[in-house]
Length: 117
Image 1 (tube, rainbow, N blue to C red):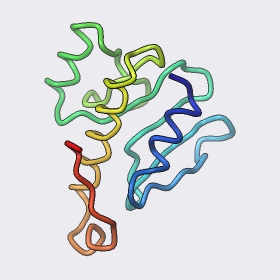
Image 2 (cartoon, one colour):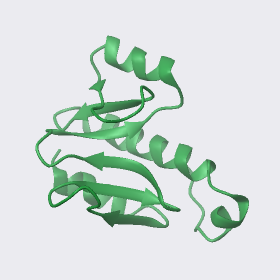
Image 3 (spheres, rainbow, N blue to C red):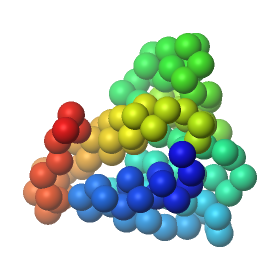
Image 4 (cartoon, rainbow, N blue to C red):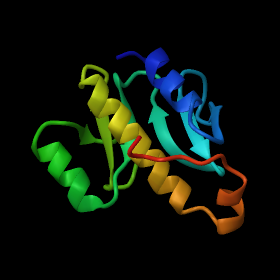
């Protein structure tokens, strides 16, 4: 997978917004003003949120990802060469977690999204 492919996946999520708040080359995707996916300027992968520190640790332990630089321990960095299905799954899960943390009013402005579809 490539940066462009990851950006296309994120672009298709309801209410997803792209920005470069950390400078050129840093692709940051937010929903409701909160980051759900980040691609660094030089790091060959995508950082995503997991449900908890334990899930992140498990993904790191089994070699699916690595500690996401600059993020909380519940985030992981998935390399671009991870399987396409794994990347899509983790991006969608990250989006769903962040979306669920939004206020009810903010969630009501977004089109429906089923993480399992």
